Length: 161
Image (cartoon, rainbow, N blue to C red):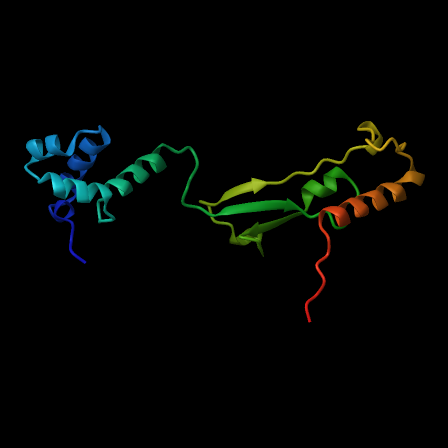
């Protein structure tokens, strides 16, 4: 693969050209200021070379970001398998990265942690759109309605043989 002639002149030259491109200086004007051909500048602008304009812009965006963009995105889930209160939900956690569970000791300093928190509410405080009173005897009805709604939304596909 041929080397970009701007990048082969070194980082200071590429930086100058990239700064002019960032200011939306026309390529013909860059040619007049630097002596580098306008076609060469255009190829550098669109290319994927060592000090390309696209990498220059990406580095600027990354430098301005308040979030560290190098780390992994880790999700911290509450493990409510045996939770009996909201304190239990927030005290036990499961960490996942790309869908796989990871240990807390595997988290690196540059990782971004997204924490999921569930709140426990009294079901009667929110009411019920189906006009069933939120009583212990109706909890089975709530559950049956939820299962029926799930079955309607997500019908099971028969297994192919």
